[in-house]
Length: 252
Ligand code: PEP
Image (cartoon, rainbow, N blue to C red; front, side, top):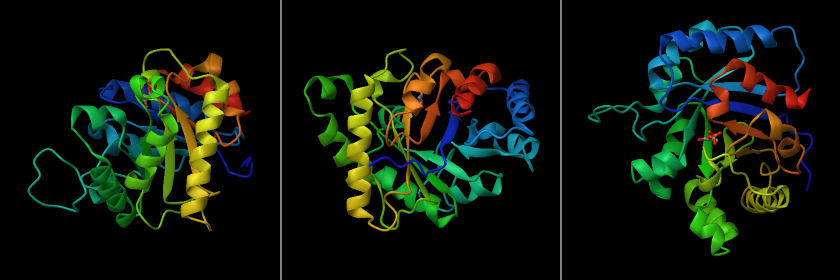
């Protein structure tokens, strides 16, 4: 099913990049978009150190702020972690959970990702839940199985179009310059949509499904025009305002 009625989202994941001087890139995005009518929501997800400053700088603008992770608990003895409530308090409206780099670097299993999504919902944040197969899983023909297993185990009950976004990010496409074929992207997004509408009949066709993995100005339009692709999660190309704006303008 083509879900053209969904307002797309273009979200930039800065990962562990950005000192205070990089706030100028966010400001440049904001200034370029102000007064324009791009039919997409725009979000930047800076490192935790910049969350509140970026939120302050974007206050009143169309650029939303997201965090890159949160702890499942609201507070407590978890040195170095931040809770969903803290993310919200810092001025963010969303949080990425289950990014493949966190699954790999911090051994985050689906059940932990799910707990983090529950925490995001508890705090009133939109959970951007990342899923995607490794190179080996794709080569073995397991992509759809892997994606369905991750969806089943990582998505909590109570998913709505407002509180959850799913980001399909093939691990082998992240930061590599490689992307799946458009047929492959469309096939996986259709499977994700089928899972969502099967499990959440009232809301499943309202949940945004983003594609992520080496999205850049030159491929954004083609990727974004595919059925069930409701936006993009952009890593490297979100660090520079000009590149990120060119991707956003793929919707214009
Ligand atoms: C990401 O890590 O979320 C991502 C999509 O990275 P990149 O765009 O750099 O491949």
